[in-house]
Structures are given as structure tokens and as C-alpha cells.
Length: 112
Image 1: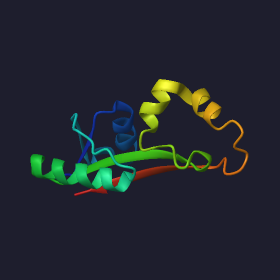
Image 2: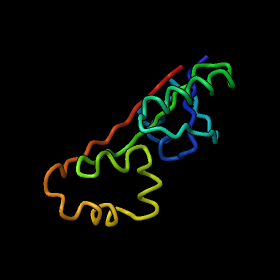
Image 3: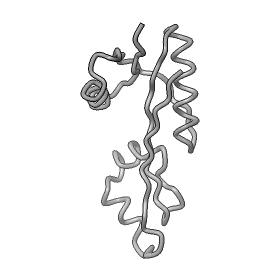
């Protein structure tokens, strides 16, 4: 049985399909996500719960945007924050922070 990528995001599904083709199945399932600062913890918890529920190998993906000047904000809440204040809002929050204006995007896959 092939692993199943679980997502509710059609764009993520298309990316997985483009890269992995028919090596995986795709399942569109809404599931509660752990609220945490670490994408690894979020993905691990989701993969374990979904694997137990579906009785198969599951792959999930989580990501975050961690901006140094904002002490890691918005982190794993980047999708929610950008939907509320947008990129311009994030840039406004960084006004006056000329040191540590770097950021890190973190994408994590976890299979269970």
C-alpha cells in the first residue's frame, strides 16, 4: 500500500503530485492541528494521529516563517497572520528593526 499525503491544501497536493507522481496517494482531510511553535512537533503529532486513524503510512507537511527582528514571529502561524495583516503588515511590524531583519522559512515533512 502506498503512503498517503494528507492535506486540506490543493496547492500542496499539486506540489506533492508533481514531485512524487503516483508513488503516493493524496487524501484531502481536514484535521485539527496542534498549536505549537515547532513545525516538527505539529507534523509529528498530526502524522501519528492520522496514521492511527487511517491505518496506513501518512505524510504531512507543516511550515513556518520565523523573522529574527520579531523574535520568530509569525512562526507556525504565518498563514493566519498573513491572511489578517498581509506582507505589508509584517513589514510595518519590522519598521525600525534594522538588525536581524533576516528570516527563515521552515518546511517539514513527517511520515508515520
